[in-house]
Amino acid sequence: MSKHSVYLDEEKCNGCTTCLRHCPTEACRIRDGKAVIISDRCIDCGECIRVCPNGARKAVTDTVDILKKYKYKVAIPSPTLISQFKTEFSINRILSALKSIGFDEVQEMAYGAEILGEAIKYELRNANVQKPLISTACPAVVRMIQVRFPELVNNLMTLDLPMEITARIVRKRLTEVVHMKDEDIGIIFITPCAAKTTTIHHYISWDNSKSSVDAAIAISDIYPDILHRLKCIKEEELQHSTSRGLQWAQSGGESSFISDKQIISVDGIHNVIDVLDEIEGGRLPELDFFEGMSCIGGCVGGCFTVENAYIAKKRIYDRARENINSKNDITDEMIRYYYESGFLDRYEEIKPMPEKPIHKDFKKAIKMMDDISKVEKALPGINCGSCGSPNCKAFAEDVVRGFAKEEDCIFVMREAIKNLRNNMDLSDKSCWLWKE
Amino acid sequence: MTNIYEMEYNVDNRDFVVAGDVSRIIKRTLQRIGVDPKIIRRIAIASYEAEMNIAIHSQGGKISAKIDSDKVVVCTQDYGPGIEDIALAMTEGWSTASAEIREMGFGAGMGLPNMKKCSDVFEIESIVPQGTKIKMTFWL
Ligand SMILES: Nc1ncnc2c1ncn2[C@@H]1O[C@H](COP(=O)(O)OP(=O)(O)OP(=O)(O)O)[C@@H](O)[C@H]1O
Ligand code: SF4
Ligand code: SF4
Ligand SMILES: [Mg+2]
Image (cartoon, rainbow over all chains, first blue to last red):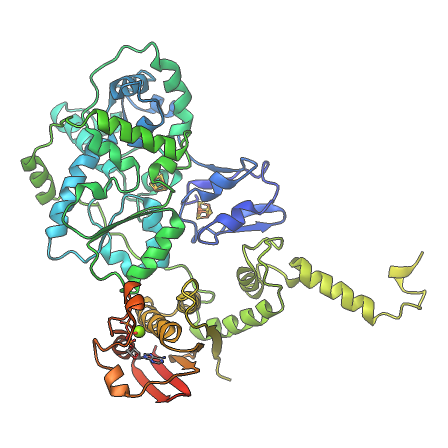
């Protein structure tokens, strides 16, 4: 089974090369007229889903049918969900509408985020922590670090995601206090993106260890249903978080918990790559904390959102302004207990996963690199993508590795035809090309 | 036959938009060949500093990287003005960078010492006003 959420609907793909040019890790290729993904490079950032003009790029998520699998169903909505609705609808109203779709309970991810936000302060005081501490909130960024910046894996925060923490708290209560059976409980995350879905189904290190969350439903899939119920729903008191947890939906939200430290928050995967490059190069030595979000604007820009990211951001801002004095039940003792007992820790270590080199034999790889640059020299260097590779350099590599043929480049082909024509005696009527 | 891959790029004087690109390309190439990430990191830091020095302090030049089965050699050469007192230039914290350059976050006088620290063998020669040559060897 694929270890990714993002996949291609072959029927809809017409091989237009749009995804090719936008994928930040050059994971896309067009082969035989259809897009394919090189699995060990894909970071599930969802960029290709966003840009595909044919709706052929999709991501595996669960549908509401998954609720039937469990006796007791809990929804954990990402704070991004709230930002998709007008502020005239209270948070309680939105959560109540969500619950009425068929959940027994709703617990906001924002709640776990508020605990985690406070815990990061302890983590930053921890002398064993390598600086800058790198946020793991965006799984696409984590994956990017594993693949492209393996030297920075040790800087990744060892505390788990807010979604996992909320789920863990719910599960603990349901099994230990209410004595429910673990397998009867279904915890379902309402997700803004494919990257978060992947961490649920494969946890972060892409192996078999179990996430506390059982399934993920895309915001875009459940949005119409909630919208439909908003007007007439009977409102319940379901909100436990404050506007601080809501901030987590946008870039800088996590960092807003930290004061008196050198922080940088970066959004958009290309910007994230640039800044990680600076960190890896040791050129930001004073930095204490790095927050990177793959999507522009943060999760409000996730590939499963329905609202424009900037409008969603404004709504978060407006809600925060209206509720400056809102309070949660999280105390300092609670946070210290959670932090010190290891309750917030990730179940397992994130390991470097450097992408596979062009050849496993180092000497052969050097030789191949030489061949690649020779092939590249014969290419026009305009990165048109018609060959099915994202740029001329990547195409040259694909040729040398045997995944593509030089003639797949229309310029190489044109040159070949021209040479053929020049070498031919045009007066020779027996030549098949010129036969009438 | 031994397999060697060599690449060479020009570095223009004062072109801050593309400055840093050459060391990024070198880093990416080493990643694709499968060099140990720890060594790549050192090479990337050293070649970035070398690239910046050419862009900031010289009239332009070039950088090459040669990848052999047992070593990576990064060489730079520029077209002047050269360094008068190499020992002084190698001193941590010594810099002739202008206020404007310092404004951009450079000019701590740590580039050359860093290059020396990151490489296994560091060789530098300079003739005023012809230019400066640096050769850095990294054992694999
Ligand atoms: N290629 C070069 N040509 C001429 N002078 C140079 C060259 N490289 C370095 N220098 C001189 O040596 C000095 C020290 O260089 P070094 O790289 O150590 O520090 P810096 O470039 O001034 O600051 P930093 O590298 O920390 O931003 C420079 O200020 C400059 O006067
Ligand atoms: S999800 Fe992101 S990394 Fe994966 S193929 Fe699409 S654009 Fe590339
Ligand atoms: S920024 Fe948020 S929505 Fe976008 S990929 Fe990362 S976690 Fe998902
Ligand atoms: Mg310098």
